[in-house]
Length: 106
Image (tube, rainbow, N blue to C red; front, side):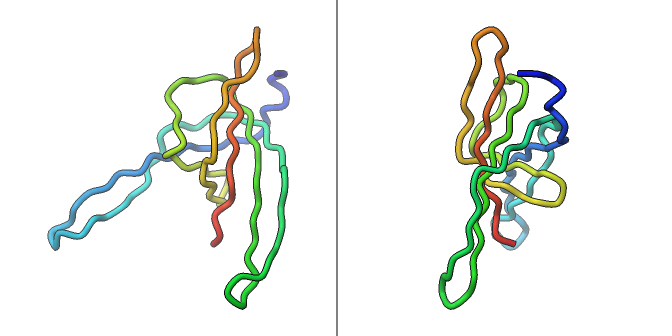
């Protein structure tokens, strides 16, 4: 992987669940790591679901190797939020990760 292709700044966020004074569970997301990445748009489509148009966008990110990420996290690219589908270790001599993510419907 050539470092010059890492031209996007993305953040990984980790979910924290706490219980409020009423006994309800509150989910919050906090930044875990911010890294440089290469973004490759893989597929996008629009379709009808429940009498409205829904959109789906799948994207692949390549980042430098790290061993502290997992699919329970989410990814932020600018203001767009992505659910992580998979994290795959790639490369022989130069290790990197490929993160397959799907944009959340907003």
